[in-house]
Image 1 (cartoon, helix red, strand yellow):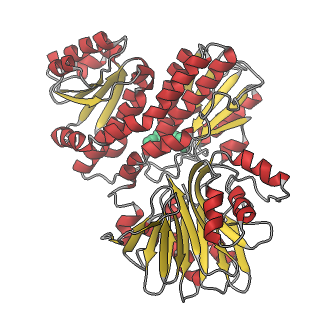
Image 2 (spheres, protein in one colour; image 1 turned 90 degrees about the horizontal axis):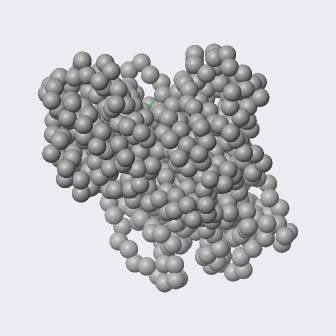
Image 3 (cartoon, helix red, strand yellow; image 1 turned 90 degrees about the vertical axis):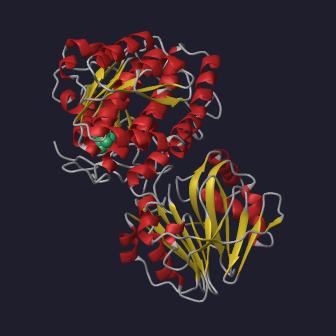
Length: 596
Ligand code: AGP
């Protein structure tokens, strides 16, 4: 997830581009860059936030340009890897949002043709691809180049001597802002609202040519498209959250595309490069904090089921002070920020103890990525809300992929079984979208239960950690005291606290523990506690046991944590909203915990 802007008109492009870009900084902020067409193509980029670029860049003359703020997914967040990228002869510049999944093949072919690359990114291939197609107009070159690209993208391209921006998209947003005698390109409207509220939304596969006084849209077969502009009613502050009242809600809604992006290029074929081609492991240890620890607990079930490798999970701050030496050949460190001090210290300790280490991280180039042998990046994009949501589900995706990989190495998973898992992973965005479509129902439940002081969350098997995560989300943002338990543990203590004033959220999907869950629900109902169950669609039996039921689409139980947690995220969000809590910045906690 990155931010793109473009300007063409009578004014100096540079200050306009930088101002627009700053409004997209929430989409990515590890490096930034700008290209302006003047007497020559002027291109400047820098590591760090946009303010760093602004402080260092020279004055640029010209009234046509593009700019970019980056959230690294391929290649570290360095100046070399920042956008825009130029071609070999410095005649054209491009910016990109998305992931080119076939970039390695394209790069090899372009290198063989003599193109020289300056970065590790997937994006740079597109600059050379357009260059290689540049006979005649830029529009035609972009059309031909994009036909060779697989993956997701929004591209914007300018060329020296031209008077246009050519842009195109597939599964990444792209909008044209219409001004008077000037036009704009952006990855979302947020960037442009200061200048215009008249927008043309570009559709998948379309290519658009934008000059200061014209916009031409062509569909994927090259036919002209007529489209009426739309007026956007947002103010600038609303738009930074994409129209959502809170970043947390926006990030919950981004989960289908975050899952999709996290799978991209990793499950296209069964022959994708394994994470560990050189080793097999007799056991695995996962170490993490908070929500990432809960992802690790789900990961234990996933790895044990798919790879048949015994797996233990430990909280980072406990692991780092434990005394066992070289206990697990493979240590998996899960941390969305990649900066959590306890997890960093655990990584160092693990290496000192001679373990092979792999990090599952969301922030490219973050501290932990330099401490471990291997990194599996989640591709959730920047998460601004303190409550982890999309980073959690993409951590689960990374753990499914890791388990599949270990299973293949261990020969516990046949090609057929892997194919079936890939099919399930690909269906997850749809399953999540189904839950998001029930937001109003979940909101109504939150209105009913927001007065509770205590709430219990129970689950079994792979959904036991999801119960823990539901409880953490609830206490973190709504300040309701939420406790998660394995449902079988209730009778060993917590039942003493169950009363009509403590609603119980019970995850009761149809798996081998279903009957036991119904028993647990009866136990708490008998003590007067209202029960909100989460179950599979069509399970009419469950409705007889619970006061309210949130139904999710039936999927194999091992994959159910993904849609179930989305229902619980929405529930905790609406509970917090009903209680008037500061959802994105809950009291006393920070997004990144760099202290002991
Ligand atoms: C969850 O909503 C929290 N923000 C918190 O528990 C978080 O998951 C924990 O601090 C670990 O952070 P990390 O993933 O960046 O290491």
